[in-house]
Image (tube, rainbow, N blue to C red):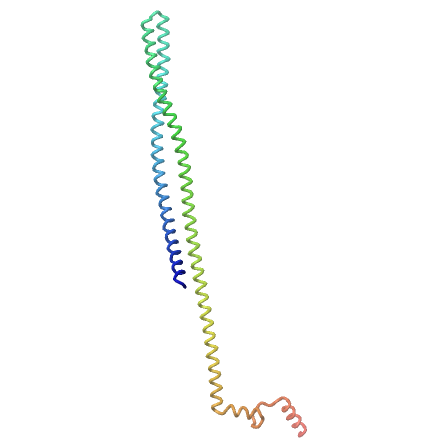
Length: 231
């Protein structure tokens, strides 16, 4: 392998390792951001609760002022009808004061209502985004776990295949060595036979020069016929 290929392979391994670390850090960063977002949402809920409480107090104040205005208006009319203009004027001035307070409280109430509506909408959107983000992170983690399991199974499978191939290669080598050994033994036996002279004896018997050789079928038939004629 050339130095360029080795360097390319090393760079590829480094890049893969760097990307794996970056991906792992990204997931941790997302987890941290998710926790911070939940903390912020909890604070938003607390602020919304406070605003709603102030809105309720403002509503109560407005209702109370409206009731007082109706009461003093009735008193002013009643006093005027009875000819007590001084009392009627005093009640009318009181109504004016109450109406000024009512205008202020209604303005505050409207502000609380607007803040409450806006905050509720923003919190709802934020919670939806947080839930979506949480689902995506869980999905990424689950997919990562499944893929790691698949890689482990694949690695074990490849390892098993490699071991099986190695075992088969070993068996082939053993068979080949056994065949070689058998051939060597056979050759040694032939050599020993030739050296002991038994090979020559076997050749003489096969030629019919010495008894004990293998009798052919035609020779055997001739022997049987000759024996019958003698009988």
